[in-house]
Image (cartoon, rainbow, N blue to C red):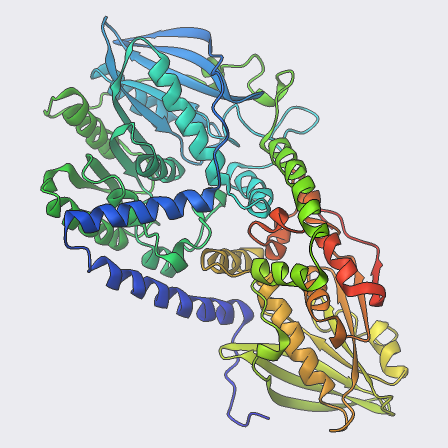
Amino acid sequence: METQPWAPLEPAAMMNRFLMAQAYEALDRRAVAYEQIKTAEDISTWQAQRREFFLAQLGPFPARGPLNPRTAGVLPGDGYRIEKVIFDSQPGHHITANLYLPSGSGQHPAVLLPCGHDNEGKAAGSYQRAGILMARHGLAVLCYDPISQGERYQALDAEGKPLSHPTAEHTTVDMGSILLGTSTARYRIYDGMRALDYLESRPEIDATRLGCTGCSGGGTLTSYLMALDPRVACAAPVCFLTSLRRLLETLGPQDGEQNIHRDVMDGLDHADFIIMRAPKPTLLGVATRDFFDIEGAWDTFRQAKRIYGRLGFPERVELAEADEQHGYTAPLRVAVARWMRRWLLGVDEPITETDVPVRAPKELWCTPQGQVMLLEGERSVYQINAALGHEMEEARAAGWAAQSPDQRRAVVREAAGIRPLAELSPVTAQRLAVTPLGAGRVETWLLSPEPGIWLSALLFAPATDGGEACLYLHGGGKEADAGENGPIAARVAAGQTVLALELRGQGDEALGKLHKNWLLAYRLGRSYVGMRAEDILACAHWLAAQGAPDRPKAVHLVAVGEPGPAALHAAALEPEAWASVTLRHSLAAWADLLPAADACLANMVNLIHGALRVYDLPDLTALVGEKLKIIDPAGVCP
């Protein structure tokens, strides 16, 4: 038993400190590796490695099909016109966009303008103003709706209104995408590539002079597109790029597409999105008072500047800082327009933005009712994910059937990151209090399955020890079923020693904190399911040892609600550790999440990247065998 004093630490802070220590180690490794880049050959190798890693995390893009473009209308303007266009990203999955064309004949350079997280998407005032400003200065602009914004919400209610706001929908899309081994970013990037395809198809556009700019979430997409698509000759991401170190220390991970699996662990930092395209012209647009940290932005700029300098083109990467808060404000719109003119038109001179009226969103609609999901035959991203999952199911089932139980367990261990019980460290335990309870007692414990992690537990000891124990896990915490006549009391009355345990990440039910820490773990390549399964195995081993030295207790496992998938993994991988296993109100199958636009975000804690490529939760039940009892399985939003 540990005798050193324990400093109380709320679960969210504990997990953040635990994960940040790993993040700092990974970021330090990248910093050392970056300093080894000395030559053009080193730079080329770095670019290729980062691009290969990034693409691997996204998964393969869909096969390109015909765009099937059509124009829904034209709006005249002073020195420009707006075409309301719609085209295919994938079959039955449409992109709505506004094309700002300068007045006059001949071909024009064009700038792609992906939107940030605004409900109105392309119709937001700042994006209209950016399109008008550049069009009046000789640059065509294609501003398109991302999924979950403007006319492209992916789930509507009975009245045709969006079920949720953009960031929430991006994250629910991400839940299914993660299970398939991809990301919301894959859909967003592919939409951007298809928008570039559309620009190339227009006779008014010079396809050799294409740029890309966007703010906030549009800055994210600009960063991705400029790194991966060589057609982006000139780029200007705004109000996104900082550094991973400062992002994690300040704002923390954000919604779906901004979280790339293992990017922190494997060293894909924000500077790399610029370095991957070096020495193509790139402007960082930043705001002094942005929540995307300004110091991190300057550090990223300096890293990129050094690389561009080594290639002999230091003038091709610059930074424009506006004394503003987050947003595509006028100073940044002007800076970007001038940058695009400099590199796409060969004109470098001051420009100004005049006050121009913007149109109501409905005027810019490309669809009759303002939502693509109201078009006949339209497919949502949820439906596309479900179809991909169905395609994977056949291959997965065949692969699973061809494997022995031990081979199946090896596959699960690798996917979830769960070590064998024999490789886990012994639990360090500290008893904090003992309180009489009827003829028995209840003890308050802290259990540490590994350095930096302390789990809160209540141990209910019966008056007469029957030689058996129960590890009891509940999504509502260790006291949830500990009432006088509750399930725990019944087991204690039967002579079982019951350990009611809160797994790592429990005890702090504010989704925001759990969500941030889960995403940090995801970006480190770790799953909460895997870490919690190891907690379960280590603590069960400790609990078994609380019996006589020569007669370890037989341990029953009970999991209610959120801990269910982790418990199922622990049981499937080490079935001999359990006398019985009972799951109640536990998620039945990951595949159920794929088509579910109404899935609760709380499910994120039970996701494993790419799991559905190799197994689903029902596949684990046979590995547990007859010991397993499943009661009242939960739906996608219990």
